[in-house]
Amino acid sequence: AQKVTQAQTEISVVEKEDVTLDCVYETRDTTYYLFWYKQPPSGELVFLIRRNSFDEQNEISGRYSWNFQKSTSSFNFTITASQVVDSAVYFCAHTGANSKLTFGKGITLSVRP
Amino acid sequence: DAGVIQSPRHEVTEMGQEVTLRCKPISGHDYLFWYRQTMMRGLELLIYFNNNVPIDDSGMPEDRFSAKMPNASFSTLKIQPSEPRDSAVYFCASSLHHGVAEQYFGPGTRLTVT
Image (tube, rainbow over all chains, first blue to last red):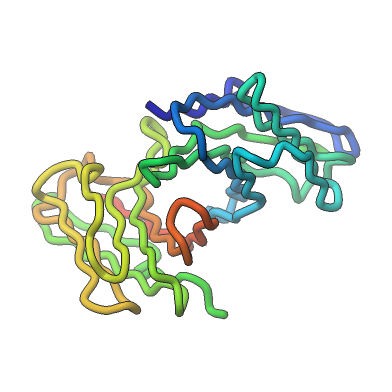
């Protein structure tokens, strides 16, 4: 069965600090996709990134970077030089052969000025 | 693009009443999903459609819930009769290719059943 674990529930940092959000997944699929979504206080879910199981290259987009490691079944998300606007709940998610998106419980990130 | 549109944004109803939530997916997207978000259970997939056909409704809690997609630009999620435990935020999402493409979410409908 698919499972996504986000062990951190709440993280609080001061602005300009770097912060890493952890995600560990379980799957029996050989082909699968991993995602990160952001849910700001306004409530909508915003897509951030998709990664397929055959591409372990790290990705950087501005202050955001993602580290995918199949050996440890992890897909971690780092925000560099965090800003108050980064305050949100961040969800990691997985989909595989059954084509159902399974979400983790989410990590609440608070960035203090 | 307007994005995924949901209505109403907020709904307050009394137990036993019928509730209908509406969704308009992004034009050209052929997959549509309904999710429910609660503090206790997080984000759960209820049902999804491909080309207007329901593919998997195993997440629908019980017979009180039903969903339809009469055409490519409209879907409804109905709860009849509603119960207080149905209180949640209901999201609709759409994507181009299920399982391989990202899903784009609507703003959600916050349902409160008293």
